Image (cartoon, rainbow, N blue to C red; front, side, top):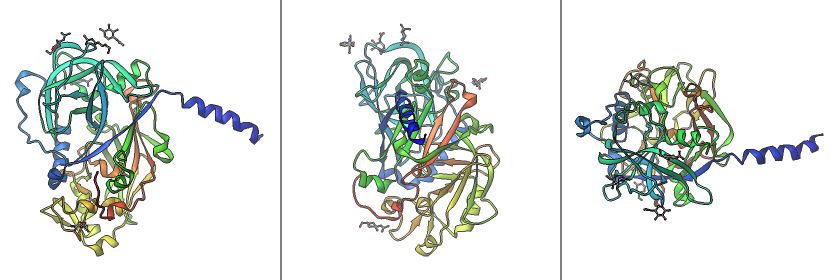
Length: 426
Ligand SMILES: *[C@@H]1O[C@H](CO)[C@@H](O)[C@H](O)[C@H]1NC(C)=O
Ligand SMILES: *[C@@H]1O[C@H](CO)[C@@H](O)[C@H](O)[C@H]1NC(C)=O
Ligand SMILES: *[C@@H]1O[C@H](CO)[C@@H](O)[C@H](O)[C@H]1NC(C)=O
Ligand SMILES: *[C@@H]1O[C@H](CO)[C@@H](O)[C@H](O)[C@H]1NC(C)=O
Ligand SMILES: *[C@@H]1O[C@H](CO)[C@@H](O)[C@H](O)[C@H]1NC(C)=O
């Protein structure tokens, strides 16, 4: 019996591979000149996420008063726009939902014969900057060969002004549709790239899978080793074991994002650092941010010192040897994700770049900048996402109410690479 079942199983798994999806390599860009205020830049982003001021009308086209805080770590993916396509290197952002190009004045939007102009304008402000420009429609292609995923008539922005994204071409907005609200004049919501691919039946599920690689690991993996992002399905080659899903939290304002309910514990302590509460998962945040009260408990538990030069918590070698795992339990009765001591430190390769000392250990757990209880009490940023595969599912039937977030362990979950001091390029 068991033997007879084998061909059936094989046939089924063959069928599932026919679901249209693509997996594209991502590039992690480290801007050494921007590494001295990682936590500060992350907090500025949280502020902007919580209080969006979309510069989508002429009055607001002037730069917003919040000072742009560029982030030191950015993941990008190459996306084709137009027919014939021009390739842009766009920031992978699950915390915003508009897709736009033209951040680099040297590489403006290229009009092609698939471009459909409108008279509307579009604008979004981010903690790291803002853009405003012309709203238009064009073809987007993800990957070139052998068969790209192509979305026609995708709503896009062509930036006429922007700040804070020097060195990048624009943003690929992978967040929920609701975040596009009032970003385009005379429109309430505009479809995201994922929405358009789904509506045009190019993908069967509104799913994005993100695999980010710890910095010192991709020095070993070579130039294309920063990870990948898949569209339309998860990429089974990027995780081990199952993906566990939890519904997007119902707690506002985390509910607007890929927000989840989670609790945080340090070591074997019975008292949590942060009891079950809502926060977000965000590819555009560098660190792991905890509400101030939880962050304070983390300092007490680890004995860390705040390093005013680096803007991060610091441990001595001895304290680091005693550092315990940070346990993140996601969802009601859900899975616990273990953030190992190695995963709680900044790659030591960067100690000097962040303005720190060679022998120290800098922590990636940072202050969110507000006490818990606001409905957004933590951010699981890149430091967490480099240890766990993450899945952003906007709802299989185009129903935002069914949105969920998934996580899985990866070959890097227990990597000891952050403790190494690797010389190489990335
Ligand atoms: C329109 O696209 C086609 C196909 O790529 C190209 O051959 C042609 O030159 C384009 N026409 C214009 C006017 O740009
Ligand atoms: C769309 O707008 C651009 C920039 O203003 C212009 O160069 C282009 O010719 C316009 N295309 C059409 C089809 O009107
Ligand atoms: C894109 O929009 C144009 C103009 O409205 C329409 O003619 C065309 O059919 C649309 N294409 C797709 C693939 O939806
Ligand atoms: C968009 O924002 C406006 C103004 O804040 C609000 O009235 C409207 O309900 C929002 N739309 C959606 C779909 O949430
Ligand atoms: C890493 O190596 C560099 C260059 O050899 C050195 O300056 C730095 O202090 C080292 N950092 C650590 C954490 O050992």
